[in-house]
Image (cartoon, rainbow, N blue to C red; front, side, top):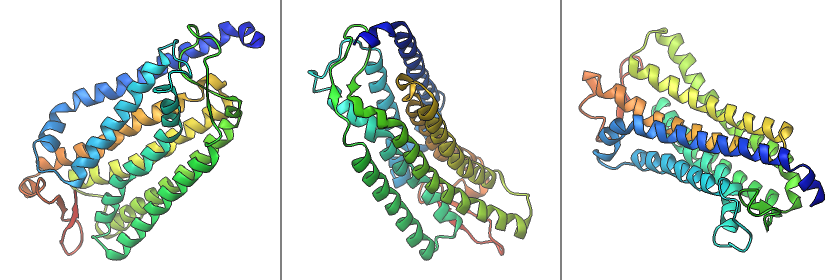
Length: 301
């Protein structure tokens, strides 16, 4: 306690940085939702509900809820372990929230990859097995590695904001590095599958492609790179930042992934709606991409 009081000005300054980043990440996602609200209403809420629509809504608004809860906790200096209805579930959300979120969002990129491979049953089996492996490994990792963390009282109530975990949090750095490597491995596979199809397409038909295809490849590859980059940021913060700032990476992961996942759906449907050849069927069963040679079609939602 004496050591904490001696370092209080530094600790308070670090919490101020954490608060700023929390509200910045939340505001960025809120801003994205506002500026794309017209597209979302047109292409999601006013259309027949499909699995893509459901995934879009859940991934986007789960991230927003996660960030709003974090903003409340980060700005509140009067929470304690006795407030078990908040702090204990909140700390569990902090541990489980991001790592569970990413495999769920990856369903969007998996469906796109499935379309790239012409609805191949072999590819479908591989992608389902890969996703199940991602989910099982993620849940197993969380359960085994983060289970020792326990909620404790605020050491300086009224001064330091948020909820607190016990001294086993010293293990946090190595756990974040391991989880980042786990997520990065799966993103690398999804990225490689997308880029392989792009290379095959360019070799067969050249670099010229429709706006729809450009968006399809750009957003798919970009999503994987963004996920990888955000977890790399989280790993670097865990390895180099003070303890109070190590959670910043998690906040930005939720914000940027929430934005990227939404754009996977909205950008594609926005471009598809402007292409006369495809305008009629995108709302019903998905998007048909005439890109193979001889011309046939692959379906994406």
